[in-house]
Image (cartoon, rainbow, N blue to C red; front, side, top):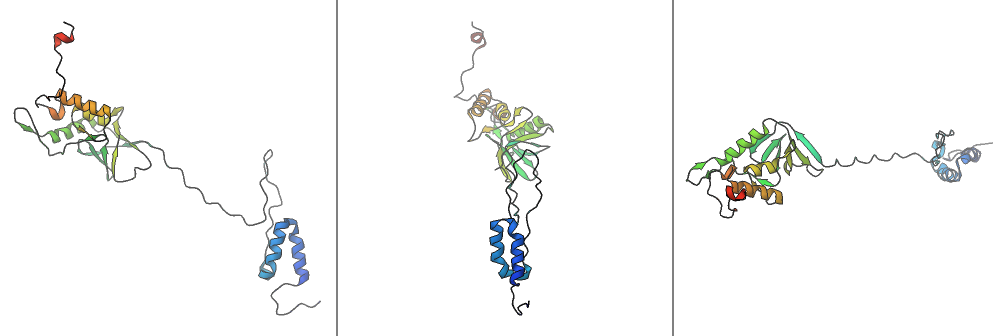
Length: 226
């Protein structure tokens, strides 16, 4: 039998043998092979699926297929849930600001006085209340690590976060000791602590005249019931 010269398609007998060989792959594979074989000529290769079933006992076998396998992209990991992050030896620049690894963290719910600010006592004497507030915070920290609560959205360099030292809420400690003012977002607990400190004239309010909106102090005899 003579072979056609100059053609790009394989002889009919060879093509028939190929189609017969791949017929065991199923109807879909046969249709695909028959469609692409005349187009691609001698370079067509059909790779059959594995002939051995490797499904473990007791499990449903996976679906069979005759086409090439496609690798699915790995999904990105889920975002890290909010949690407390531990920071060692933060740098303090005022009574409510920490600098850690080129990141500035302001303690949530409080507002610090500038370090250079002075306060005036009732006798007219000025004293460095901003510097004293910073010194008191440093004494309280005393080299202990600070933990701040970060969520997945807290990725910037300038953050406002709730922070603690051990079990102590750092913002609440500052307000209770009178070394900071409550911020615009302060909770009722924070505002109450700041009001009590101001009326007790501690921290920033040391030596100041008694505020007119504070409740009158209870006499010792009245407190004892007579």
